[in-house]
Image (cartoon, rainbow, N blue to C red; front, side, top):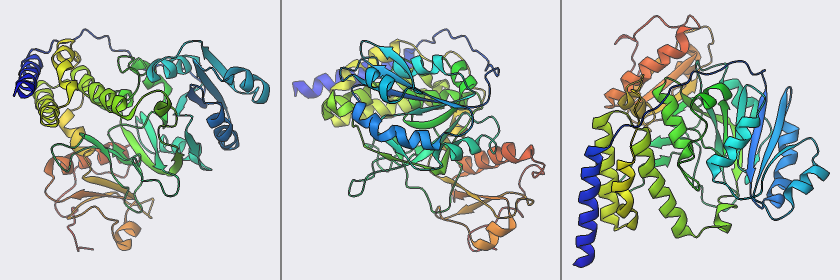
Length: 412
């Protein structure tokens, strides 16, 4: 009884604090476009010499044109910096004698990056050939693109815990609010809420304009969600790139320094921080905050104890340039994008009962087919809007889609 009362008190305090959340002063910076074209690969690594030894050959093979690799040696005690200087002299090393959070570590690398795009890559990610080229190609296809993120696979026999197709959705109200969906066969450049900080390519100017990764998210987790969300607020999308593939040796670094229970608590705490710090729309924040704190209460999670303090630390002061409900609907798991076969034709947005590859007839008739789950009207409107943004610059978009152009399941 006493335990239940304690959770009830924490929950009530969290709800009140959510209503009282203050707004933090923020200065909005604009991107600087002065960096030369190229890719800077930034890899944070703590005692990861063996992981780097397995990873670096693939990166070097995949780097073409103007590029560099920066390893942030994050408080390692395994001789990583000396080994890199001896075996990989072309790799630049940013050395921190003491361990930093993920955000602080990658920000060190981002500050040193010389080129127009920054690839953040965890040391437990092994890239497949063509990884960087596929990510880079997305920036020529999607206007104002902030982030292109990879498809994540796992070693044979290991359950696929993430895919790269990140959406804000729950099958059950007690599920964690953000998940990875299985990509649909043939989809590519589908909008996602954010790109994984472990295998994504970012526009460096945009990333710096956001202030890099927010170092409030210590020691790790959710900083990439925060960055993607804040980019969407400025009209800078993220997309999933099916052809950029990595194999993830899941938590090969974090599991050596934290228990599973500690990692779960870090994730839950940082998700609350994300809501309080990043969500601008007051009504949306209160809804998401109520759902999150209610879920913690039902799970009897001790993280709830800190929720009121997190809310009262303050939240996003800047108004979102894009309706947040719109981009959350677009990235909520109800939309999939499929490249078409006719590059000279117009795109098509269509409703369907399930997300599945469109017919070959439709793919041959259009430059792109966007499938939206039936009944998801906000997602449908968002898909029309963002498809228009994408293709208007290529003179393949005549404006709003008409009812005649919106084909339903079974129509050809």
